[in-house]
Image 1 (cartoon, rainbow, N blue to C red):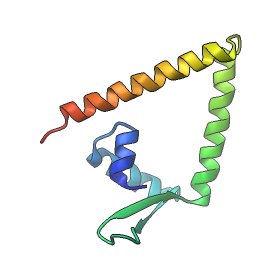
Image 2: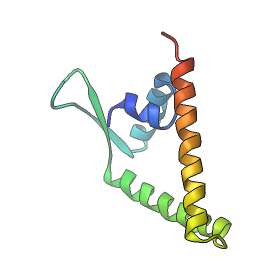
Image 3: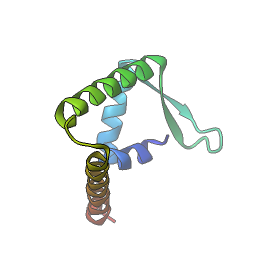
Length: 101
């Protein structure tokens, strides 16, 4: 995925995303490679170490979600998930409105 697309997903400015990617690359969690279709562009991918860390984080997220919301049924959880997706989309829209240029 491109650094620009990642910054859009995590709602960070591109400069901030560069710093985050620098740190993740130093830790061996991501690698940057030229885009095969356009060598001016960079693609960011997880390393094996990054995939393993993401899997552990996902497992922990699932455990915490169950601890917090275990008493809710599937329909209630779906409603919460939908509301969170709408909230994230609103933040992404706000980010594009506030972005310079």
